[in-house]
Length: 155
Image (cartoon, rainbow, N blue to C red; front, side, top):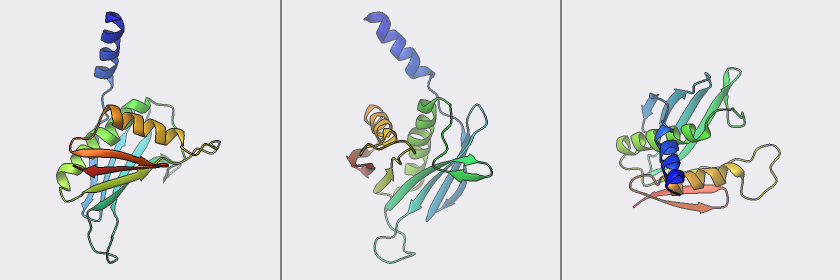
């Protein structure tokens, strides 16, 4: 059991995030980008969701992330890279950076979209996102799930 524990620790330490850059820091739409080891380009957005009047800044944001697919960004492209490293980048480093820059954001939500072949009510993406966030809770946020939607709420 001791060897299994040290192996698990070794794996956790080796999962590093990719370096990222800020593309836009507009209060209505924050954008980040990064590239994985095989050259896939990612775009992460935090889109402000007006809750009172359209165009009015609120404290609710939707998190979206895309992979470049033949010149445009797609949510459905599946890439063969270390998913934990991508998750660490999006839900670890980028989310923490956004949280510091946008201290008024009280709620961030996102949806684990279904792959083409999925028929389950709760998608595999939702399950892996939720599992990752349960194991690595974002500092200062509570994590809730309702169907395929995951909500991060500032504590």
